[in-house]
Image (tube, rainbow, N blue to C red; front, side, top):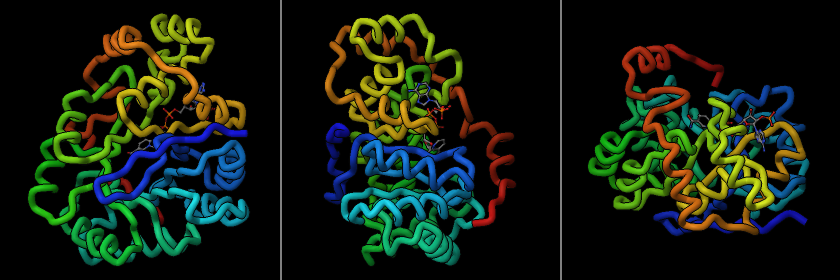
Length: 286
Ligand code: NDP
């Protein structure tokens, strides 16, 4: 029996499970197996993207699972090459087609580059039509987030940004809270970089609770009211990452993890001109 995952109410009333399953870097030919295992483990919230090139496999796993559509929360994302008011809706249709769905629970602007204001107008229309129950953004620093909010009608329901013990985003989260945007973490386990799984503070807390480092980190994020979407291709880790609702960290333990913040990305600096230029050249068969 998998644990019951709580939900958070987004700014438009939609309920989002606070713990989901990410599929970045899951190869297309493994996606169906991996997502089938994740659904069997108990995940009901899936996070993919057109750019991950695995939506078809994710869709096959959803179809064969037999799980009622209204018990699932499915997110995908619009890639930069499809940014713009006239192109975003067609990219949305292609994603839905690959996923084999007639609506999404959450559609995100994947990156804050190109004509994302145009994309947002198209996504507002999809949201009003009910084809995307919620719309949001990803990788938006607070300045761009506020700019988007202040010049459009619909406030993003979610901002999915890199967040983990080494890059905690406290100031970003304050702006999101003030503006009613749900903070969602990508790379909640730091993508396994910088020896996160053997960090002495994290292993100490894991030992104290009879839990793993991954479970402590996910619990720490959830206690900060941040939605998490860990990825694993291994069924035993899928189950482990779900099993984080039966314990809690004390305020002192939360503070010990807070002290690990470096204030910098361990993966990708979304404000570095060279990185921005590079991402703008990356194209996928979306
Ligand atoms: P994660 O922080 O989820 O880390 C995944 C890595 O940790 C994998 O190498 C996995 O290995 C390993 N791992 C998972 N669970 C455990 C465990 N319990 N013990 C030890 N190792 C573990 O990184 P992701 O980059 O995958 O981020 C999560 C999701 O966020 C993505 O899948 C994607 O959906 C989203 N994302 C969004 C981005 C964006 O730009 N919007 C960017 C990046 C990610 P193994 O599979 O072998 O278990």
